[in-house]
Length: 322
Ligand SMILES: NC(=O)c1ccc[n+]([C@@H]2O[C@H](COP(=O)([O-])OP(=O)(O)OC[C@H]3O[C@@H](n4cnc5c(N)ncnc54)[C@H](OP(=O)(O)O)[C@@H]3O)[C@@H](O)[C@H]2O)c1
Image 1 (cartoon, helix red, strand yellow):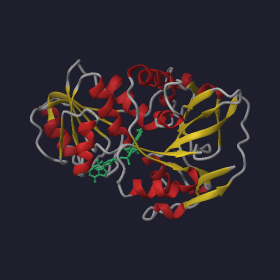
Image 2: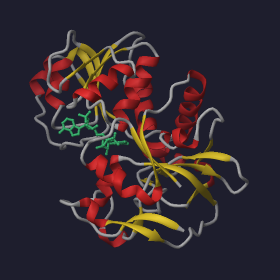
Image 3: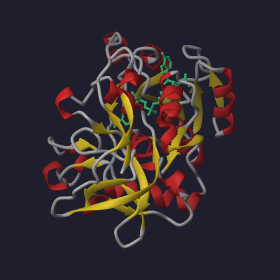
Image 4: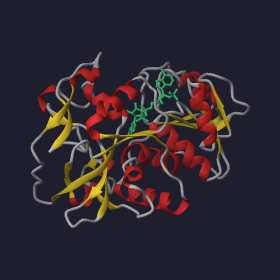
């Protein structure tokens, strides 16, 4: 089968390790099944993998990709849940299984014509969503869904800040938070992306670090070092930061004085369960909320998508048709 793999690790020049070509078809073990991939989406995770984060040299070559929508062995339209883990080992939540991994970390990923996954990882694709839209849900959108609906503890009509509007996770939070009636502020380094955030439903969009017109109840931060101080400063007393990533660095100043004096909470969040993925797909089908897709490319041109993400050019999701 045709696939996009990480062939080498290069921290400084991650794209140099990317290879496109033929790989053996998956050989699913007992209890697993093979999905024919119709569309797959790119995540920052794929760039981290090429830098060796979560992917040691001894597992190379590794087919990249966490997100896919396609057809199961009976021809049903399905979305693939990217978390390979045992829900029972995580108290009913596979993301808390201490041995869990994401597709492309231990098992070959989704940037391929076929992907093998445990049968329980398949969720029905609602007919209302295209394969390209459905392929955006399993990683960035699922992470955004859990952060917003399970981890933020928001009252209806809250004020929130989303850092780095152009990202897959951030654009998803802006869209969903606006859809359920929160007052959403967003930051982006790029004026065009700030404008697009407004079109997604943001109430205000500012440059990173700019003072907001009001203090917010929650900040969604996947950017890390570059935005952390601003995230802390933007919260009302008792507010909450929900963090899922650290694209710009993972060691900002903790500013403990601000955290304890204003009684702030810092809440981590990672991916979501298969049940949350099913509920997210239904949410999109029922509300008309759809992932913001930056561009769709044939899988053979995946390198263009990787380059755009490495340069931070995209607004929303980069999707590959298989
Ligand atoms: N824990 C989990 O389960 C989980 C799940 C998904 C993602 N993540 C992590 O979350 C992060 C975002 O993922 P993604 O797929 O959404 O990535 P992405 O689409 O590449 O988005 C990254 C965004 O971060 C912003 N950014 C990057 N560098 C910045 C800087 N120096 N200053 C200000 N903003 C900067 C950019 O916003 P602007 O261009 O608009 O300024 C960019 O759009 C990644 O680190 C990823 O690994 C974690």
